[in-house]
Figure 1 (tube, rainbow, N blue to C red):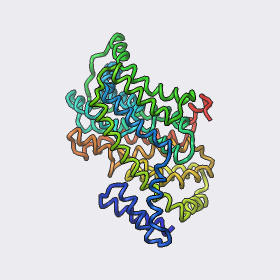
Figure 2: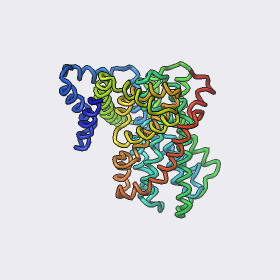
Figure 3: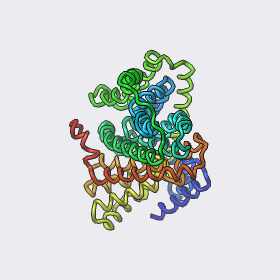
Figure 4: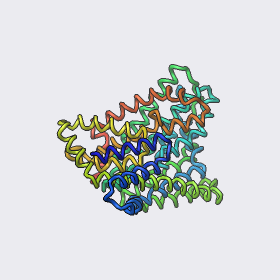
Length: 428
């Protein structure tokens, strides 16, 4: 356990010095290896390479590229028009459209930060012009879009599948109900706040308008269906399906929507390359830390201590929620999963917790860290877009956070929320 304390102290010190997460992880790993003295430093680059050497991880750049191509190809505006036609007639209709658009977008990019940036640039100024406070518009956008890694396709679930050898297809299916519940909770809070503050009601769209906007958004809405059907039917595995999603995005953006140009494709490739490099180097650094912990049998020691100190599964789930929420506040999903999965999953299995149920708990906790101060990456992004003080955005996000905690409690203590869809479809 001394190694764990030394490693943690160095890592926290690096993060407090505002070093990038990847470099903090690698520096902490290198310093700990030097402190141990019996491990050659050559083991570090070997672990970095080993941490990203997986065919399944190819799904990450492909899904990122597919989402970027769909954004560049005119998807966002069509989804917004359809969402506004559906819910614009209600009090706070634009706020509800924000939630609906985030839910639709989550089935395309699988990235909360990407969705927050893409939709925030469109919706936050529009909400401000309609009379919503900038702080509320920013907080709603950040809270609504963290559903991205829950509703399939999900980069977070790809990582969990790689790290734990669980079926990524079943993880995707298990995320559907928790993701929908989360979006419903965000919509309920948005509606309640809008009614209390008297935010505007837009003119209702007729069935012809709903039909027109649905036809325009049809190909964008079909992308998650295409992905799930392709995986569920066995026609593609997850990596192959991510590549097919890129092809789908190219065809739709170029020929159906006719807005995707060669310049857009080039820019999307550059952005995807940068995002993939960031993700992979973080995963490589996290693998060094995870390997050091495993080398000193820290996961086994923690498991033994928790099994002796915690007698009931529900207490373990409560403790795991608190730990994951705290870690998600300071660390991105990738490194957090690489470090914690070897520790927590064996303990969950010893307590009889279904691994797919536990995966939903892990994913939801870690994405909540994106709107949990003091780091709160998503809140930082929307504060800049809205031109609002982060203190105001943080104050506005608390009702959404409370609603998210209610959903988290349901997911944690009602396993059927996560397991019903895979069981209904007979996925093992």
